[in-house]
Length: 526
Image 1 (cartoon, rainbow, N blue to C red):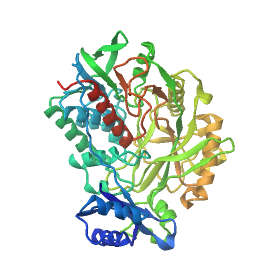
Image 2 (image 1 turned 60 degrees about the vertical axis):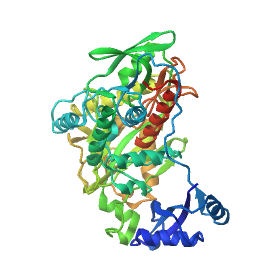
Image 3 (image 1 turned 180 degrees about the vertical axis):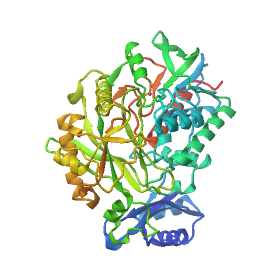
Image 4 (image 1 turned 120 degrees about the horizontal axis):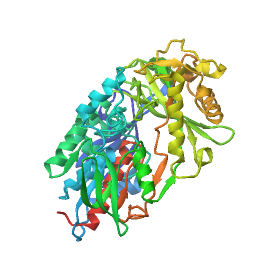
């Protein structure tokens, strides 16, 4: 089995051949059959010693030699294979495998099924990526909100209008497989080795289109503007799916609708499907000048062309134990209007592959749980909606409530300062204490104060806060068992972020693959 050699340090200008030579030397390897840089991360903890740390993948001439290296070198470990190896069931399908949603979870579920002969049919609420871009662009320029095709709904899911981050906390060999598939469909090869890979919203749009085309080429279908509106249940199974314009009998239904399909959650609850409330987070988007972030991280080395755009991940807990943390940091990006319901305001962050915008932004999110909003399955969803609608009332439009950090601390909304808000629909000065409950504002102030001791830019009163950020993750879990099916319906497979089983592009894609493998283990290909 191949190995990975970890903790190989290098200067900022070292090339891959130098890194590989250092790794083989450190592991006492004279010659490798194959060796490549596996992962690279930047260590900027000490400004006097900013350097890269690498892992190097190596295949040796024999398993015995690889075993010997792992025994004598503490930094060498075996690397698990990252292939998809389905086990095919023998039961005949009564109807097609249906997938609700074509975000990362639904997309990778459909791809794996299609490439193994299952011809799935996907029902996506929003439009294809090209028409979706037009609808979103029109809204950002002041036009009407399309509640079906927007930042949340449409081909590629919410991740299509993001930074295209491919980082995840899960440790699963399938993560590598997902990265390889993204490269296969057009992503830059560098995502395979970067510790914090990203594609950028501009490149991601073309990739999701190519994945859709591959699914169709193999006999699958993707139907846009076709939300699943109802399901027919017979003997604790989904017998058919009703979508806008028709119905389809199904052998299995994958629910990969994303975290914003609120009417879908209501439909499932009305059908008696077991749901439960899930903790999530709400908060604001903070914007700094990107150069201020770089200076806070790199000091005098800020602006060095060999260094990446500065990014951060910070967390703290206030005196009550409530977590507050930064989330979805977008270097060189913009804060975007992300509403999917009329008369509501929602923010999110987005950046393109180059990350060359003037500002950086990130969510500052405060953890909330059923003790904050109620124990009924949909209470968290209604709590988030109430904040979004309150934001709309406070500005009287799709403009977002905003204030500087300085204004937030003194309780006086102000927009003066060196940071210009990037929110496309515009912002209006609003005291955030009028938007959020007191415990949320208290936690935000605590977090900002704590983060200012870790990064200089957080101590700037000119940093801008735009609100609200409410779609950090799903407030609902469609609970499933060990075989990944619903506790209520044996052929309903809750999947991805909307079902409460993922948090971001990578983990959602992995979950989609796992659901596909489970379905294949039950049914024979068509």
